[in-house]
Length: 283
Length: 317
Image 1 (tube, each protein chain N blue to C red):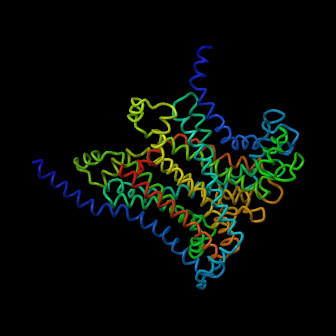
Image 2 (spheres, chains in turn red, blue):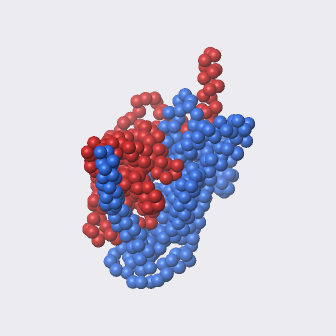
Image 3 (cartoon, each protein chain N blue to C red):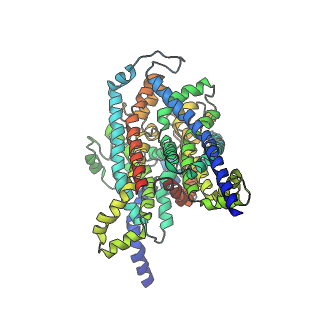
């Protein structure tokens, strides 16, 4: 009892402040879980208590199987994974060398260039989607996933370069010097010493760049028009919500499936992300 | 023996650096210039033409698009909404994130779990999070309304937002009423930015060196006085970063408004971005749509200048 009282005194205030926020912020996801596994008839029954499954568990997995068998959901998952992987690969090829060079370039030039690349990350898709739609149709890439592969690095590269610059700055220059003393060329020192040590940082960049791709909505809705070529972020809000028959159970399952793994990854890599994000220049 | 070798190594390094650095940076910079700079210039060009989605060429119309939009009631409202949504949501975000970050900085039991819950809105793709809210704000089966009805607080809720004629039998239409639609959009923006701002605040608080706390303790500063004179001033730089990002994320976002209301009811909740999409893509007036989206430039310029001033200050200290 004493230990309990002690624990309450220690942890109580923090729970009292953070708890309500956590409940409000997480409620939509709780509601998604409840909805995703509820019988459709219960969903539309206002006399029943809505915050739990009435009639007990197990309720139903019909919504989830509907989603996988009667919609293009699996196709959207595949499209998103494909675009994500290709874009992340392009991003790494372009951003790793640039981030390294900017981290080692001291003085006005390097600093200015770093901030300049960072500022391009602030230029939003909503400013560029109209001219880019013209470019995409000129290149005959309309309704092709390759249009997204071409355009997405425009925001992942500045973002990744900035993060990587922050990570590479934390790696002591002496390590490369030592490797070069032992006869490595600078490029070799880079690929054999700097990049392997930065693996956690690079992994962070991979995860957050990938999540930017999953998140993107404006380009995906502008450039892609057929259901089977949709990305996840657009397919769910456009193709699953049609007319009066809205399959809320299936839709909530569709949002949970990508959200939960992403949230777990975010949580695991958050501290690294902050280190890279604020380590660039804002320190 | 070591001396000349050292000298040669330095010479090599200099030679390599001189050529290597540009070679390493060039691909990324070229790519960005081509895919951000190019379209940006093209956007400005298009905004001065009457280009449509169908025809490939447009005629030069000067400032006509900008003036026509400026005189358009829907655009005016969209401009105001963009400002309103951004300012209101960011004020709430700053307060909430400030409180949350201070509570989360100390270790306590279950912190990992609470932090996971708080991060959820930021980790989930925006459009999917907005879909969740679409269901929460449903016209018939809104869980908010169920709660209001069953706690007998419908009247109070309607009074707060000054909605006439709503009752338990005619509960608030969260996305169908012009005022409530705005409230809903602001709610979702606030909801999704709070985790991000909290994370940045946490980084800011953690970066305050322990010596500062020790010095404050030696000088006898405790509690509120310490917060006001020591902790708060030290957090202003990082709070500014969070705020500037929050402004960009909210003002340039199209997803939340598009998914929740599509600009409705009766075009009352449009923001610049959804109106640009409506004009440029859905109506096919590419030139005019480009002009609409370029009205975002002042916001971006403001944020960019803010970031630059801030980066310089961070450099000095």
